Length: 134
Image (cartoon, rainbow, N blue to C red):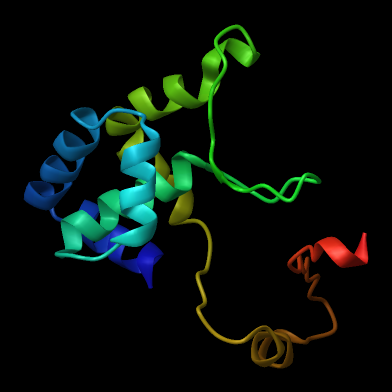
């Protein structure tokens, strides 16, 4: 999956440097986001870069039914989205360190529940939020 590919890229110093450069010289822009959604493929570095774009420049489902590119309004929360995007190249190592503390699975949910269903296990299950069920 994309998370594992991202780790593979940042694990290699040369690839990590290329990814950091790609991000550093890529603006926070709706066009870039659209490209990432439509063309999120390519070599491993480009896939990792597009994964970063989709992760950092998108917002989730809203009550209005809109989702997609996270437009930033200066003054509202200090234009945090653009600021975080601009800080990302220097934060990649820190991000990797945080993610190393979690276990990543890419399997069907019910299969995972069955595999990890033990007496002293707490599962936090965050299902998709279907608008019609609200």
